[in-house]
Length: 443
Image (tube, rainbow, N blue to C red; front, side, top):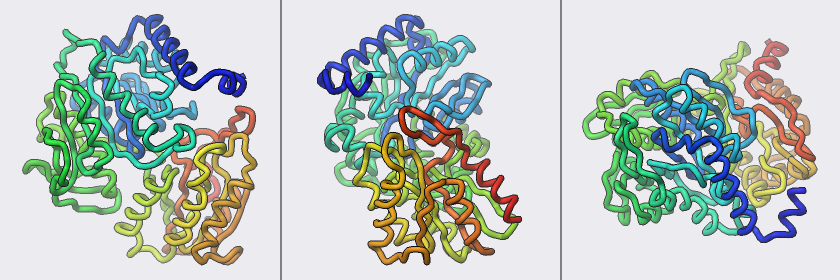
């Protein structure tokens, strides 16, 4: 039915209909976003981790918080993994979740706000107070039609601030605020939208051409496995997250907390207690002496960040890199497939290409394209690159090849709870549990 509707009606009319439904669902639940401070987080990479950091920081700082992301949901004290295979929930689900947050007394809601959700106007009826963009690189181009349209879709979050209802009596006085990544020139244009306050975050020296706004700048990075250190305006931060990209995510979260009036010293102290994000650079030590690293990294920019972290923190202490990956999103982003394969071929010693989320496409065809990408940079079939259709068997293959001192990377699923197949079917999947179960057979 959805396919028929898409063929019969222009996209703008469908988006308008989505928007009307979004507003009606907000009306049904009595506009819950007007009774909380709402932070919207968009961008290409780092959205879920940044949402997690913001939500957990505010919780540790004493706020009752709710948040929703690709990875997880929180409603006050209740916390669970996202099992919906959606970054931004549909209209009725999202408004109900916001209403649940109000019901348990949440003062702040943090909402991961995707380009697809914005393009479909799922944000109508949500009164945002803070709009944040983590970064912007080419993604979902086939879905949006071009990078410019993708960028414009993200801009809808910032555009919505001018129409967002002013809120009083919430305990927090938060001006309508836009926050951009001053290190990423592609996000700078979002600071041109109206906002009562405009802020930014970044590392090192402010780049030429960056908007002249109040900025949270982190310097003197110290990167270690599962922790990082940096300084903001003389205040030392030691966070339980690894990699340069997580320093950027942390600075974004700090910028949001500062907008809400929290001093840097309190934020720094709170950050030491922020828990890890499930399925994001998650480390498992195997009894046979190799290390497993589970991460999401579904597209080239995030995969590049993953390899950068591996090179900085793991390459010198491990023998070989064995990488299990696929290409998520059957029916979209086909251009990324050979690129991911080539990246794995260049950066990993052994590559195992497998199934991920084929949807209505033939998974073997997706695998073959990724596989060809690895071959194009010199990998040799059945010697240091393998094709294994079943993901469980692919992970088992990687474990069988792993020796003491090796690092096995499992990317593409992270904390996702299902593999998306044809005709809307979902097969339950938990990468961490699968890995732990398989390890028992290799111990």
